[in-house]
Image 1 (spheres, rainbow, N blue to C red):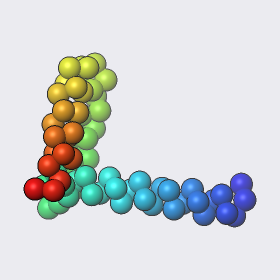
Image 2: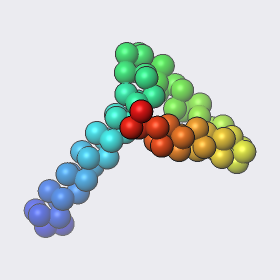
Image 3: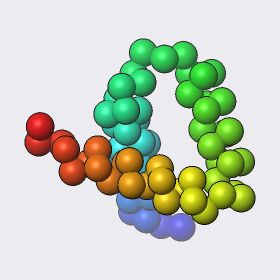
Image 4: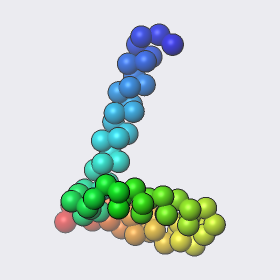
Length: 71
């Protein structure tokens, strides 16, 4: 991999991580313990594997929250 491609991949990875951190802040979870956040995300991953209705429900909640960004 060329040096430029490596640099671009690192920049993209950094941007993705910053955006994911922003989701934690937007959800109001900034001051929760990291172990709790990780546990919740791991549990969610397991539940979403088998429950499409839960995936749809949570997607709707998230879409609504993004729609209310200007408020």
